Structure formats: C-alpha cells, structure tokens
Image (tube, rainbow over all chains, first blue to last red; front, side, top):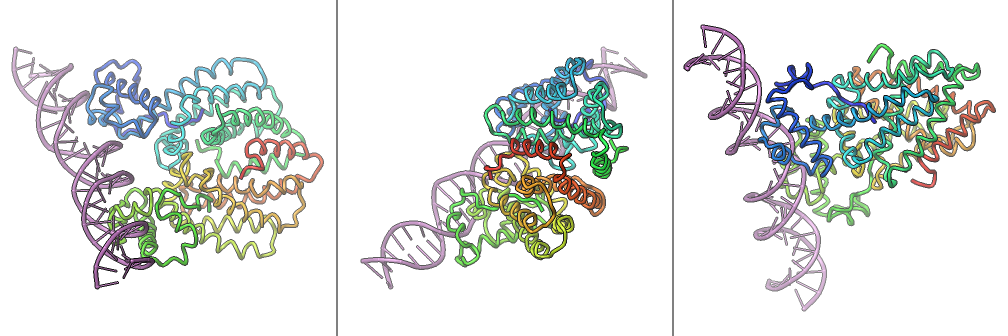
Length: 246
Length: 246
DNA sequence: TCCGAAAGTTGAACACGTTCAAATCGGAGA
DNA sequence: TCTCCGATTTGAACGTGTTCAACTTTCGGA
C-alpha cells in the first residue's frame, strides 16, 4: 500500500555490508539479522507493536537484547522491515496488473485494492505504524530522505501505469500524474488506517468511487474549458512538490 | 492551526468535576492541575516532547510524579493541553478576521496564516505532536470521538466563514464547504509540519496559491459545465465523510 | 600454527513512562 | 473540638527501550 523507507539507515555497523546484496549474504551476521527480522515480523503481526517487546523479539530469535541493537538502531527500525515485507508482497501482486491491458481506472483500482488486501491482516498494527511514519525526520516517513528510494519505487509503479495507458489527457498532467497518484494513495492509506468499518468496507467503497472520478478528471483535462483548472492545479503542485525534487 | 481534541478524556478521577467550569474552580486540585499544565507547556516549548520528562514536569510544578498522573492519564494527555492553549490563541486571532468583510479567499488566507503564525514557534514540537495525533484511537486524533467537539469547533469557524460570504456557489457545495475546508486545513498542517524551508516559507507560498485556486473552483461550481465535476465530487465526499456523521 | 583485529555477542545498567499501596490533608457533621 | 471520609499526594517499584564495556568468535596473514 503506502510507500515508506527502503534504504538502510546507515547508523548500524552492519549497514554498509548489508547494503550491497543482502540476499546473497549467508554470513553469520546476516543469519542473525534475518532471524531477528523474522521474529519481529511474526510477533508484531501476532501481538501488535507495543505488546511486542525487544526482549521478546530477541528471545524468540535466540539472541540477546543487545545483539538486536547491533543490527537495528531502534525498535522503530524493525517496523520498516515489516513494512518492506508487505511492500514486496504488494509489488509482486501489482506486476501482473501492470502487464494486463485494461483501462487506467481498472488497473488503478486493482493496484489499490491489492494494497488494501495485503495490509488487511495488519490493520491494527498499521495504526501504530502511521504514527511513527508521520513524524518528520523519522527514517520511515514517506517524505524523508531515507525513503527517497522507496518513494521512487512507488511512483515508478504509477509511472508505468500512466505510461502504458492510452487515455488521452493533458500532457503536462500526464507528466505529473504518477506523483499525484502517489499522493492520493498516501491519503487513502491514512483514510484506511482510520476506517473502523468491518473489513474496511468504506475504504473500498471510496476507491470504487474515487477512481472513476479521477479517470473522469484526467479525461476532462484535455477540454478547453478545464484548461485553467488543470493549469492552475499543476502550478499549485509545482509549488507543493517541485518536479525536480524527488 | 489544526483541530484536535478538546474534551476531557474521562479516565482521570478529576475529570467529571473538571468538565463543568474549570475556569471558575479555584480548589486545591485545580491549582495543582494548572501548575502541572503550565510547567508542561513551558518545558515542551523549551526542550521538546521527548526531552521533557514527566519527572522534570512534576519537579518544575513542585509536585510528585505520581501526582501528575492523578490529573493526567499519560504524558500524551499533557500534549493536548498544549494543543488547546494554541487553539485558544488561534481562535482569538480568527475572531476579528471573521468579523471583517473581505472576500472568502482573503479571510481564508488570513485564518490559515494566523494558524501558521501561532504554531511557528513550536514547529519542531508539532512534528512529534502529529505523530501522536495520527494514530487512530488516540484521544488527540482529529478523527477520534473524543475530539468531536474540537472538530465541530473548528468546522464552525469555516461554517461562519462560508455563511458570511456572498461568493456565489453550488448550494450543495456550500453545505459541505466547511468540512472540505477543514480537511484542506488538515492537509496543510501535515504539509507545514514537514516543511523544512526557513520559516516554513513554502507552506506560506502554498497557501497564497491554493486559496485563490480554491476560490476559483468554488466559483466555477455554479457553471453548468462543471456540474458533473461538482456533483460527483460531492458524492465522493458523502462516501468519505457522510454528512450526518460529526 | 599462531596472532591480532574485526565481527559478533552478552547481560547488566540506565532513564524513562507508568502504577500503586500507603500516607496525608481538609472540611462536613457529631 | 473530634472524627471520619473522600480528595489529594507521595515515592518506591515495575516494565520498557536503549546503551555499553567486556567478552567470544571468526578469519586472514605472518
């Protein structure tokens, strides 16, 4: 769903090594690291963020508390591992959707729906997560420098979506649409997190309504009458989020 | 600026008494309570949220730690006192603006600008505050039941603004505009909190650009060509935030 | 084979938010 | 004045995230 940190926060001593190809690394340290991550993810999922103590994570992974802090600078850092796990899952599900040839709206709906489904089992946890991600300067903040990579990865999904659509639209809007969709998704995540209807039904209803509306607006951007609306909107966006900036 | 909790969180033993007319209450308990609040506000402002410990607050107020917890269920509860202080200040500044007879846009700009000014000295603190307010279920969350009152207070400002404007607009939009403005303000707060430009210049620039744009959109809502845009937008809003619900 | 440095690991210790049983206070009624 | 009883206050104690000095393991090179 969302799109938060991806890069390693360079404070950990194991960070540099870890940065280049962690998957291939089978050294002792990497094994320990992964054991900790696995325990953290499982326990977060089972008991939530607060109730899962660092001592419990360490014990479950079969290491000492101090050892966990050798690999992760803080409990919050383990949260971004949890987030990464889900983002990978979302990415995998999104791939075939992008390949499919349906309309912009249908594919956007599908992408958003998959995001909701991936996160659904962790709705309660996500509530805490958003609290951590919302604070500026936090490495998991979607606006932080640390998550530039993740942000670009997320917008690149929308980029591919937009590039592969034949829907006619204002060319300037087209250039910015991926970022706009990313922003919209961010808003949706916030909404979803606060949605207490069973199964987050209301969020799904919002998607089903909002996406066609968006499609309509995008299509309308070509019309002369809507030109000032589009142009001024894009000018505003340029101030809010200059194109050059990541 | 924002619009978060206002009501007492009923868990404190002193809550019921406090609820009815705290201003007039000069009992010992109320004096203690106010001493704690005053210390908390001052220390939060001076050193930020994390660095201000409950022990420091209690010591500064001349009471024991346990005593602070007799009046406030958690450190976070003191944050909402800080928020309330600033909201009162904002409200006071907004009053003359509402009374003034300038255009919708000018007054909206002024309201938002005053909010930014009131909060400006506490930009760093607000970053933490938003992290607390963003987590669902938190009493300071702008969407929580506890902050219904504060939410209505905030929307009532925009209600008065809208009611007293002669700008022609779609009547259905008019009915919903206060809530839309409240949502927009919420977004602005999030943006402001993450704005690291000196003096949060960029946020101010966004306001100066966004408000006329909004005014333009509101005016356009009367035109026939924009009817579907307006109608569908309002339908979407009705799903996102049903009118009946606070 | 041995050495030394780097990587990895440990658990006690610290500071913090929070809880709670017990002590104290203050005023209404006898 | 004395006696309760609820309101208020206390500080020690608990559980938590985090730090750190010391220890152990690993491994490349002499």
